[in-house]
Image 1 (cartoon, rainbow, N blue to C red):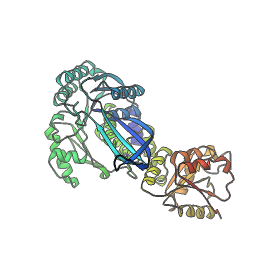
Image 2 (cartoon, rainbow, N blue to C red):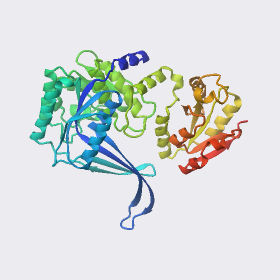
Image 3 (tube, rainbow, N blue to C red):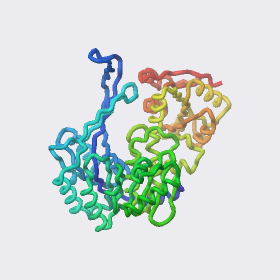
Image 4 (tube, helix red, strand yellow):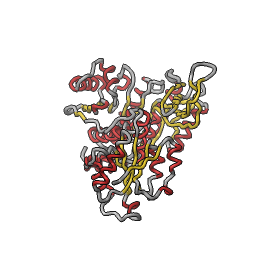
Length: 468
């Protein structure tokens, strides 16, 4: 999509009301250190130091929608234990309507625990109930949707095959939506897609589409044929097949297939990308965008989230930022601080040495270039922090803008990433991204302004390089 098209589409999205129905789960993350082996068995002992919780499954679709400005309703069945209460608190914090969330004392709320040691995942523990919900709970959900259908601009069905989206529920919900002319966007799972018949659009990934069509999808021609088969079989209006690094393929009832190239610069973590695609497709369609416009936004959003580490969301502002960045390809190394945090963490996990240095570089000289080349020589990846206009105005008086500086610095082969910070010193940024090496020039006279001990505390070190 062109920048002007992205801007036009985003301007049309104005807080649509969307019902998300599907399997909910809590993702638990535990981080700790490993310093010994258990005396009870030959296993590592993880000393847990930090923990966090996030919405998983259909809950991640909800999280994406809220982040993008939608008004969200949820319909599902969970248990009555502490995990269910944790789920509800997360939804409450997001402002999600939970009138359609039902608690079954005989059902287990799904929880997935991931344990990390030394920045690497060492174990995942799943607690889940995959049994289809009973007819009583099916009817509770169907009645809720029937009573509230006029409140929704559309419905997203997020199926993780954990028992909520039964054939009965899907048939009834899709029928209600058709009757009231509401779009239904389905993120499907499983070998048999017939239960999604009559939906507006489905968004399978390549593997899911291959299973459902019983076709090996190893080239574009086969992908299109599989899409045509599913389109006819399910009597749906469109299908969007996500193809990882090869982008997406969109096929509608009328017109040729459209192949959309992937937009990610680098892929760090594909977790949750499918949720982002279904959320953005739903957001677009429920806002009056056509399938092609919605798919273009979804592709751009997916490219953003796979460039981060962990199950994450994006925003309309971030989507616009990346569209603007692509419009000006010379800024392709410019990376926002939060994204850079994930980038650096990924390199650190892989054992690569990340090097960070900073400055104004308003009048780039040979000495600056030699300094940056020496800094790059200390590691594998060089990140350059640039003081923004607000920060530099109080120090040296800017001659050019930070964006222009980023353009110039990005042209140097020795520079891998450029980040702009507004503070007088980069300490806050350093604490956020945690590079392995921080480099300063021998003419730098603000040692007292930076927390060198703090840098050593997270495993970093400080080096001095001649600027001459």
